[in-house]
Every structure is written in structure tokens, then in C-alpha cells.
Length: 313
Image (tube, rainbow, N blue to C red):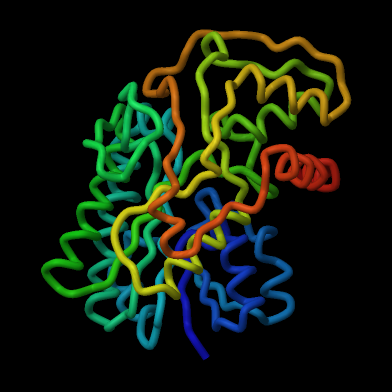
């Protein structure tokens, strides 16, 4: 049986990934320190004995070296995944995202892991005006978070060149879907909009709302991870839908789908946020990636989940 470790596997993306790997017959081990991950995200997996759970951090190198014994693939999702949080506390983001990634690579190298799939971010491109974003563009990180993700990519590339450790870096563009936490002050835009609209409160937009994003449904991101692991390619790949939408248009669509008539509220822009984002996904198509979920379909599934989960949220 193929064995995979998912770091950050109790988190939003990691729990979906662990679930899908288990469905496909992998022996799944979830590592999470529960800083932002939640046991309820993986409760069904554990209840049905479809995954093992280890509470711990990627900052613990000794733990990783022990955990990665006999492992085929490491899906490295663990991070402090927030631009505003990194602006407020850059040292914590550095330790979790850079030191943690270095530890994952060291433990993977020492244990002969077949491949590490690293969750990077579109934030590494920064606010360069050229669209769409292509993997060979010079990076221009605008926040400590973006710097940490770029440093992780460089470490992945260095470990492949120097030690022969196969690595794939996936630059996520605005992943959304069920289980995304709307309650943190650092919450991503879609769960925050859904929660507010569901409560009858107007969505809050930072800035004029004309900034654009390329939104990616979580199930498409999961499929990209598995394709990247099971294929024979390596390097850096954009993972997105390949379409962009303004934040104003997003808010209008969510309000419509939730069924409330609300007018958005605008507040001051946040430091570190980029203006426009759109991915060229042709390189990822080379290993079989093909996004299946349009924005409205993904939003409908996400809203349905939030309405069901409302008592627990």
C-alpha cells in the first residue's frame, strides 16, 4: 500500500486531500499541530480508521524523521496561511513556513521519500501588472507570507538539485470550499462573505472591490496534488481555474446564491494585498491537471456546506 503523509492534514485543504487519498487506497498519515487545523475536519476519516493522526509540528525535525520512515509521498500543506497574519507576526510565519519546510525536506531526504509535493502560493508573483501569471516570471513577493512561500520553493529546487529529492511546487490561486474557516480575523474572502451574507450582514470589501482574483475550488487543488505526486514531472506549477473575477462581482454572486438582498460595505485596503491575479495553467495541464469546477458550482457546494455546518461554525 502506498503510504503518504499530509502535513497540515487537519486543515482546510489538507483534510480534503487526506480524504481523497484514503478513498484511493493510500495509507494516510495526518500530521497537524491543530494551530489552525480542526479535529472535526478529519473526524470521519479517523472514525472509519481510514487515516492515522499524529499531533505535532513541522518545526519538530526529530518527529518528522521518525514519521517519514517508509513513506512514499509527503504532501506538505502545513503553514500559517495568511498575508495579514504574516504582516502582524513575520517571525511566526518564518518559523512555520520556512523552517518547517526545510525540516520536511531534510526528513524526506533522510528517509528516501519518493516525492514531496509543496503547497506554494500565487502571492510569490506580487503585484506585477503582467497577466496571466506564468511560472517563469520573476517573483516579486509583497508580504512576509509571500517571502516564506518563495523561500520554500527555492529550498525544494535546491534539494532536488543537490540531493536528488523529487519535488513539485504547486502555486495555489485563492483556494476555496467547504471547511474553510470564516471566523478568524484573517479569514479568506469567500467564507467570510458567505458567513456574513448568511447572517443577513453585508459583505465587507477591503478597497474599491475592483481587484480581481482567480478562484480555485478545493477539489481541483486536491486533484492537482495527486496528479503531481503520481506523475513524473517536477518543478513549479500554477494551480487555478484560469479565470478571474472582481471582488465586487464575487460579493454580488454570493449574495445572490445565499438569497439575501444586501449592499456591500467598503473599507480601507489591507497592506500586502495584491491588485490583480490570474493564472496561466497550461504548464500544469502537462501533467493532466484540468479544473472541473466553475465558480458558481463550487460556490453552491461551499454555501450548502456552510448552511449545514452553521451550528458548529
